[in-house]
Length: 335
Image (cartoon, rainbow, N blue to C red):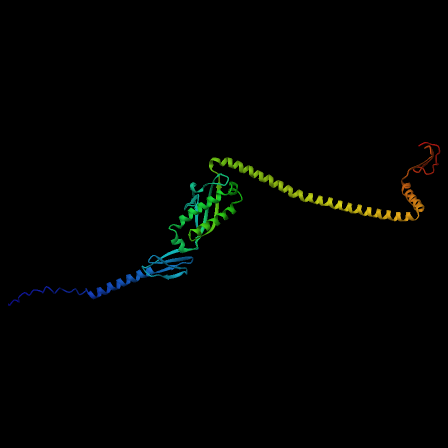
């Protein structure tokens, strides 16, 4: 048997794996890179704006645009940056207290302790409600707009409280003070370009410090009693004044009527006297007799007894006009 000589395999020839295809691998790698790039573009360039949101766009760190339309939006991937701001949500800042997740509150006395205009110490909790009105200013003008708003809000509140007496804060001037604080705070926010709109200021509980609370309650009770007395007096005044005015009007009307009556009577008497005087100047004797008879006619019905006397005041005759009319005159009887 002839044996074939052993031939070695050339070094440049390697066994081929039938499952390995370099072109296919290269294709998969290319497709993978493309998919990664597409996903990166989609996730970095496409975004959605909800209703009430705005997107502030910067390109290479410089402000580019503000997108306000809700819906699907696109930006240049990896070049543009977006800052989404909700411009409709009402946000709240609390001063003097903090609301916990369980609904409980914790006090922050360094924020609520302040001096009033009459140099009294008061503990007052309050809160402000605001929303973003300029998303660009809110995002870029101030490093921390919330903290800046808290600082200027506390400053504004302390200034307003320091210009009012304690009674205004504790009683019926809260509404006017809230409006004053809100106006002042909005002016400061616009001056510092915070980009926020102050929608409300709410003054919460206001009370004196614990050390003087008992005395203050006594003073408050005295003031309430004072106000009650004032209200009672006002009620009595409101009841009595109309009656007094009515009585005064009645007296005035009666006086006016009496005045008119007396004037008419006087004018009538003057006219009568003028007529008599004119007739008297024409026929004095006849008018004298007529006047005498008229006087007698008026006087005699009221006469009860008639005495006829002589020059020596001696009664000559007595005529009893009352009593028994059949009685005869009695002569020589002194009255």
